[in-house]
Amino acid sequence: NFRNLAEGSIQGILIQRDQKPLFINRAFAEMLGYESPEEIYRLGTLAPLLAPEDRKRLTAYRKARMKGDPAPAHYEGRAMRKDGSQIWLETLVSVVEWEGQPAILATGVDISERKRMEDALKNSERIMKTAEQVAHFGSTEWDIVENKQFWSDEIFRILGREPQSFEPSEKAFADILHPEDRKRVLLAMSDAVREGGTFEIECRIVRPDGTHRALLATGEVFRDESGKPLRMTGTTQDITERRHLEVQLHHAQKMEAIGTLAGGVAVEVRASAVPVIEGTWPLAEAGIVPGGTERNLSHVEPHTVWPEGMDETAKLVLADAQTSGGLLIGVPEERADGLLKRLADADGSFSTEVIGRVTHEEAAGTITVLH
Image 1 (spheres, rainbow, N blue to C red):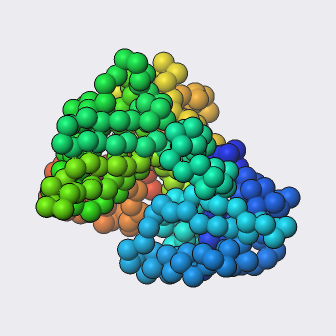
Image 2: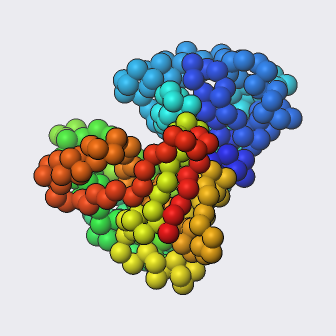
């Protein structure tokens, strides 16, 4: 689940609302010199962790983000350690729902060493490579006049390519982009070249082995005195782990909601009536089962009474159908047929089935599955 994944992450992760810490993983606590997250929880507020030099700026970002106003999702800032020293953090943030209310999810890495090296040796290629490896971001430069591109070693690593056998170009980058993101990203780049300024965009790429990675790409176009575009510089960061964490958080919230609903109602479900996506059974019987499906079963099993003799494959499929397969609506039995007809008349693109009934005479919080 989300907590297990977050606790195992090497990146610092926190969730906060109005500077009150709601969740902190061990990596974040240790990054700031605390022995455990509990020490930070006892502070009651994150305000002491913000360096005085950056407190006003970061507070303004937080307030704007919670109001829905524009605010950077990717920035650097200084934080205070327990011993009073400062470290530099590179942070990615987004607004999520936590316990039914908006909150801020932040993932951070310690870039203090990178900052010290940058101050000591400006424009050093060795320093940039080290920084990129620590933060999982690479740098790019595009000579627009000569139409030549330079990608740092970390860019090749993120894209799953070898520098010796891959020539950087606009077409090469376009081919790597996920088909669903390609048009949007190329349009953002062309707009930046035509209109000037900067851009920041999230997208997906497809590696040679078929795996997908989520990226955050930024760029800035530089022009001559007449306004002619000369070059574009940018950075690309691999944010795949952060996206996985957000998906896990969403799934955990969904499962918690299911558990809350199950606590106040008892139902009977006919297994034979539950709609299952075509092709699911052969995959399940072959042992091809996503990890999330197994977690679904482990969550609903304490609330479920299975029929005698039902095998584990059937349980996995039914549990996944209940939590991920569609919308489950409870209505009085005498209104069921009318509701099905209205749904079918409104939109024929989906199917509706009566799969069971709500019971009131049994203990609340149980799901009884019938063959």
